[in-house]
Length: 253
Image: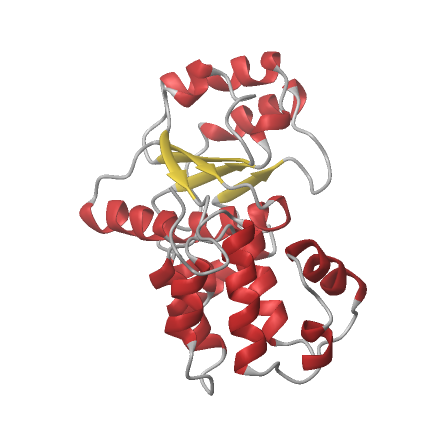
């Protein structure tokens, strides 16, 4: 199981697809900029009902029925939106649906968003749009109002527990770790996963969340898994840092 496959955003889109009630446009909000583009492509694969071959081509950004804008590392402007719109009315090649993915919509200036708005207001049949943004405040209200919102702002305790059991089947404390951690942002869950893979001496040397982040950023390779005591201590510290509980484990009000 991949972490994102069981996220609430993915489950919502999958339910829409299975029920035949896909929205013509979705706005996927996720603060994890490093994974936003990859997760948009995974959503596109579900929207299109892609088989294994199509999923691979979508991931490689060379599937004819899934156009992805802008090029990696660039910002979409009026020219990129125009290029996308030129392709919107061309029929799908391999399937019955086409998907257009726009990454980092929050970086698009108003003229580009306004040009996109026209096709969102009058979308062609069997054409779907996936807009991805790390935040919604730079996305025009008129654009937001014409999309269905998908969010991945945090992972629940249940999602964290399922991920830890799948990723580290030898551990017996996944439930306790998830319960202590509470809801985790994508970055925090990645941090928690990384800590499990760090040598015990590294975990013992850190006393705050920022210290763990610094350790993970400066370590190129992972060592042996830390002990259960180290990991539970980390989960408690993470929970305190996020404001879920005091040092005695009681709930803050």
